[in-house]
Length: 241
Image 1 (cartoon, rainbow, N blue to C red):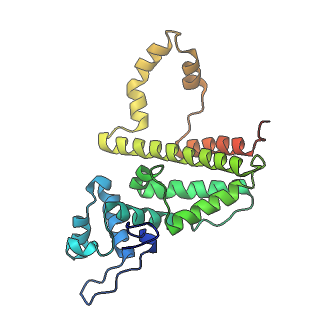
Image 2: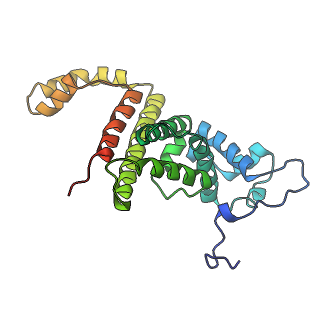
Image 3: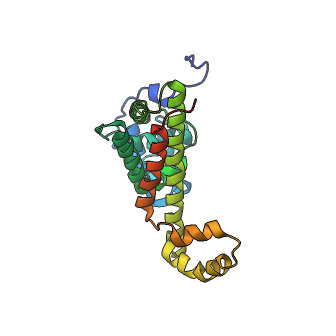
């Protein structure tokens, strides 16, 4: 097929839906993505396959290839379905409030769909809803006092998105570990507390000891929003000459 991309197929976002077939099970890309999302929510990305999706939909696996060419396109559809939820975030009063609202919506989505965190920070997400969230984020951060030009905006977006990716992946990993081991953070700290106390009592780790003894012990949500404040404070700061 001769396309603007040479012989490569058009991106899934530019390919029209296949014509409906006269079969008992009507299909759309949205239906396929919703079914794939339910499977990934229950079994993770490792448990996701076109064969399982087809079985859940009551069709043959080959039928799905009319709608998606490969697993990568399937993941693109699933990711953009999650971004559709984030894109519902309404603009707030001020750039900082809007950035916080988008971050909060992204965290909520990642905790509801843990596989989504696995795909953050990988290849660019270019679906229409992902682009809408990117536009909303950039439009908010460009209003920060410390953002003077496009270079500042690129750095601000980089810092904001890097924080989201790292924070959400860490939180999701901790949730998974607690679930698979049956040991939550409190139990883990209790078990290793005596060892850590003995190590800190040696005096070799004074700064770590200060963090453990005097530092605030926040829960996951508090930690996320507290550290987000630090990132936004940095973006709001004036650019160094």
